[in-house]
Image (cartoon, rainbow, N blue to C red):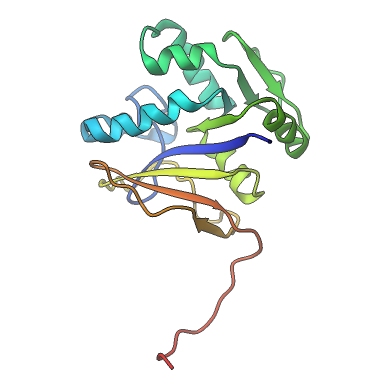
Length: 205
């Protein structure tokens, strides 16, 4: 049986997924709210997030997120997340030929659909963590199995969004009822295919 590609995104109510982990994670474009997730952490949500990380057997990352992780996690092991990230294979989507210094790192080729099919034969549970630009590409092309969208009760008004103005339209389907173990709500979506339809709301028959 082929493996799965899951996208993990931590998002504000207004859809911002930039730099949840810390002030220096991604201050690009003048973003001033790096680390917004930290004050909203709670034990039960943390347990669910860690359980998802424990289950993965490969990481699939965009270039920017890879660089951020590669500069941090090799120096911050000795915990569940760091040990898992350092141990598993890392696959990096990039249009260039970047240096990949983190152990067990591999470049994904230009034929993304073919490359991902190969990875799904090689691994059971591949996770895309953060990597907003890359996640947009996967969602627009239906090249994923599950989007795990953790939505936190905060509005920032600035920052990179998974679904920005001018993004490509896509249909999704809710895979399971929402889960709210603590402060955040987990929404699990899968690709539905096709182009979003329109209609007119009317009175019930």
